[in-house]
Image 1 (tube, rainbow over the protein chains, first blue to last red):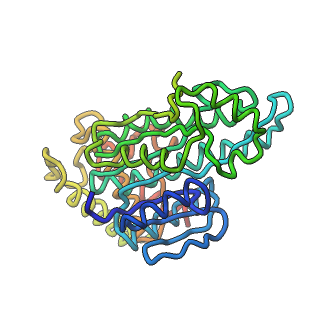
Image 2 (cartoon, one colour; image 1 turned 180 degrees about the horizontal axis):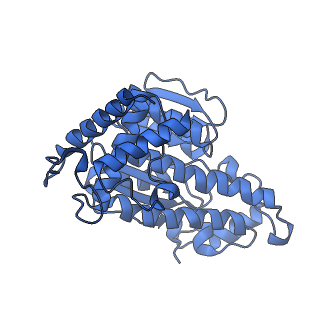
Length: 235
Length: 102
């Protein structure tokens, strides 16, 4: 991949999003990031927007700016996500709203606007984020897993609808990685989860970058609608 | 809304169609002008081509007229006469939405 890509990453302030931003900047690509709050990442090829990914107007404004400033979008990485671990009987309705707004609606809005821009060049790569909690039906993660299962379904149907426009849509399901997302999860729960993996270790940022690299490679134009779980997790 | 506005919309729609034509193997025959059939019945576009054209027109409306419209929502789909059946219907529908936007 030698051409300079325009890459949009949601939830780019920290964790996987931050690592992916730095990775693509290292490769010389143009990176556009967004998160609810300001980002301290400073780079000549990095632009940051503060927004709620479920705010349709704000999302559309970001894409208007991308269209105006860069004229194209090659890669969208829908990384922004929130997790919640709780027994179903103790989960408030507001948690359901919050998780589906960010995890599902945010992914939908960004994917829709991205595909509009990508179809002009008949090329685009959309990478969504799921979780191994979907494949493993993890107790305590009913709402989080359901919101990510919705993302997987969106991935498959959207892959069919935009396949004719030269756009692929795929999904990655990471295992636990040392980020804020799992910081509140008890250690024994993480160990139980890792015991379900074929490859029993914590995931790394490098594991995620490897799969993202595979999905966005121009040679991967025959790969779409797929979800790849890390760690040897499968349904 | 003055007739000039409709002319502007008409030009914008035809510009989008002409621009979109460049990507198509089977060109749209627009010799019937605004009466050209686009989608459904004897329409010349398949569903994916219609989607692409609508996206391009929405973007052009936003860029050139400063109005953000959603052309293909439930309201459009449930109309007795589809806004996407002929170019004239599409122009009328866009004009109607712009007036409603105020």
